Image 1 (cartoon, rainbow, N blue to C red):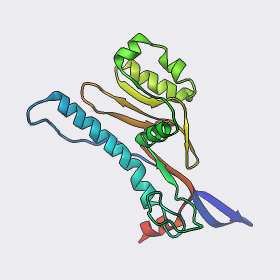
Image 2: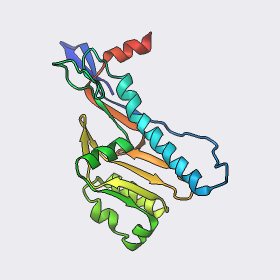
Image 3: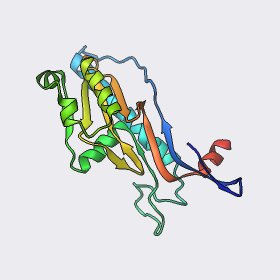
Length: 199
């Protein structure tokens, strides 16, 4: 997304209020040496979480200029500079929600069968689209992990949730709006990134 700023009909500056990046599919062939299905499923879950984490970490570091903002993990921030914009992914949204005291729901098939109205009751603070996608995942037999209400991170407001196939450990790590992926938001996501890409 680009946000041009005009003066007398001429673009004088362009800022980027947000960027959406998606790792659409990761394909790999894995197996456990001892043919242990539980170990294979656990590895697939771990790999999905890792890839979701990369969706918010990589753009946040790549699209932030340390000369005009402080990275969140910096040990010596420059006084007077604002924090750099943060990326949002499914695992980041769940982490932010947990840090703010929200309940994190892990809705398995058994829980869903015992409480088929859980989406409309426990997750009613989420948008209709998010509730609908979660409902579809539960109806398909997936296990869903979601926080109880939307979060705000660097100007982005929404939800992150994970829908996992319990038989394989593979799944979708989604943020609100239907993206399997991540978004980075903030007013400083910069022109320097365009210069870097042009070099």
